[in-house]
Length: 228
Image 1 (cartoon, rainbow, N blue to C red):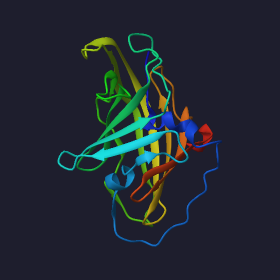
Image 2 (cartoon, rainbow, N blue to C red):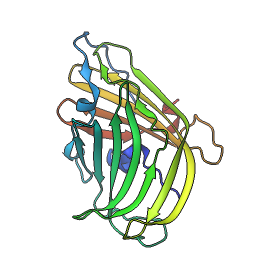
Image 3 (tube, rainbow, N blue to C red):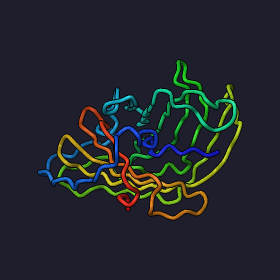
Image 4 (cartoon, helix red, strand yellow):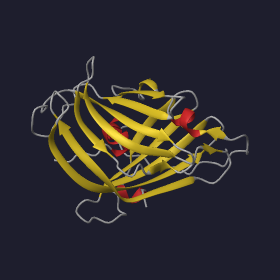
C-alpha cells in the first residue's frame, strides 16, 4: 500500500484549519530586499494554529538539509503489517540546492524517543518543491510544477530491512506569494498519478499562511478546483 504525505507534509494538516475557505487574492506590497525562503518557510516550532497538530522545523546550515517533523496526536499508521495501529509522526526531508528547495523524502516514524522508522518514501529525482531560494516582496508569485515525478515506498522492520516496496508517481503545483516583508501564502495542489491520473484536478488542495520567524501558522483545505 502506498502512502503520500503531500508536501506535502501538508496532507496530515488538511483537517486542522477548519472548513474550506475562499482564497483571497493578496494585495501587492511595496518592493523590498530579497527574503531567504528556507529560513522563512521552515521556522515552525510548536502548535499549528489552535492545535493539536505540532510542526517542528530544523535547518542544517552546513549541508542545507531541512527536516520538518509533523505530529498529530493519536494518528495511527494504517498500512497492514508490523507497524499497523502505531502512533506516528512524519519527518519531511527537503534539501536547499543551488537554485531551489528540493523534496527528497518522507519518513514515517514512531512518536517516541528514539523515533523508530516505520516507512520511507523516497523521491528519487529530488524535484524542486519551490523553484527559488529567495523572494522579493512585491514580486510575482513563484509557481513550481512537478509532473509525474517518481517515488519509492518502503515499509521496514525493526532492523530497518524492507518489508514491502512499491513504486509510483505524483504531481504537485505550488504558488508562493510574498504578501509582505513578513508574510507569505502558499497554495498547493497534489495528486498521486501512479495509475495514469491527469492533473488538474488535484486530489488535495491547501492554502497555507507563513509568518516570518514562525513559519507555517495555518493551513486550510480548499475545493480541488481552487488549485489549477
